[in-house]
Image (cartoon, rainbow, N blue to C red):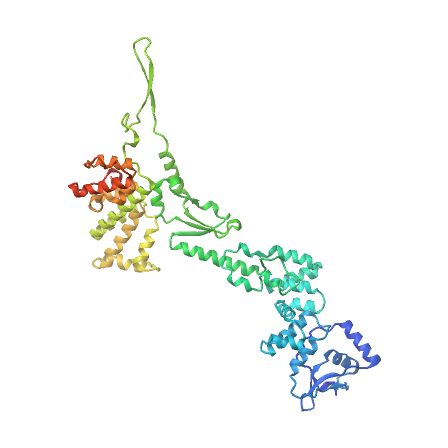
Length: 541
């Protein structure tokens, strides 16, 4: 059949080695074509090539397009030409692994994913088929390099384990620097990420093509076990997890940042131990109080709560707390008798404001828990007072706070969201805050919510000043209860009983603390009234 009547179909073979083609042409010239090419008759005077493209190319180069070439036409007229071509070419030993990969993939697709039938037709074992199909992950340039025998199969297998965009650059280095398979393996191993260090959910990693444990079942050459060669994917998942952790914390803190060595000088840990219990209460309501999620490799994903992002304010609080812990000044007085030979004695004089000989334990010293409880009780009293009064009281609080620069707190944002939702615009706020809205319910609620938010974040001294200016009486909103008593020591309970002139019984302080509290609470039912009594430790003054 004339060559120009033969149509070439989809041949998986892409590369025809020039030296091998010359050998084939010499063989044809010397002894002729020993094996005819295989074609299928199209019924219109033309044929479709099934097998033998190398022979056809060599014959055409020797004798031209108009020459006749020996052909064989299969008896089976219903033969699937593409399947036959794929199988015939794949079974030939001189195909490259990537050409085999393309052929096997095309065959499996032609067979609608029937891997078993593909193995039967090709005479391959299932594992070998999987290994060849895995080479489809090679970048086209890598596949071409293997087709043309410029790199080894080991190079291609290693490059197939990384993302295609990285394969091109790596291939350039392999070709330009003549990098061996062993050295390429070391290089990829160095950039691969350890899956054990991942902070994200690794459920999808078990079957991922970038998992080195998966790769080891497909390729002879792979990196160390338990590694991810999908560096970009690993980085993206890591960043998504970091952002997710930040997002969860944002509902709890006004400031949440990704922290690392690059910004470690912009924040500092804060707590009762650094600024004191009183100051820390206000810190927790501050707009600069928050948490950090570490981006540093050594502590990736670790969360640090209780961070202050206002270093100037923090330094002032730490300094004030340090000053408050200094011992009271003392003076040593020497008393000399005027009589000869009299003994010399010394005593410590009390500091101003401290009664000589009266121990510090003669008053209730609030613990951190009691300070927190007290502030919560104060806040409740403030809130109820604000709600019981008209908007003018709230306005007075706002004006006072703004004037004294006591408005830098996160609670205002929370109050705004409670009223207006997540999106707060100037126009929305003005519509409820303007004089024209004075008669509307939301006009008053808006002012009260902002006023209360400001009050909650005030430090102890300005809070007390504000409450005194407003005339708030804690006794109107709080009285001694079991929760309060439980925060006191047994000695504190005795001091409290003395302070409020509570009638005591022989067994009131004889038992355990819980029994003492029960006895104290029973006193109210025996004629003693706690109403209107505010112990000094709870006082707003």
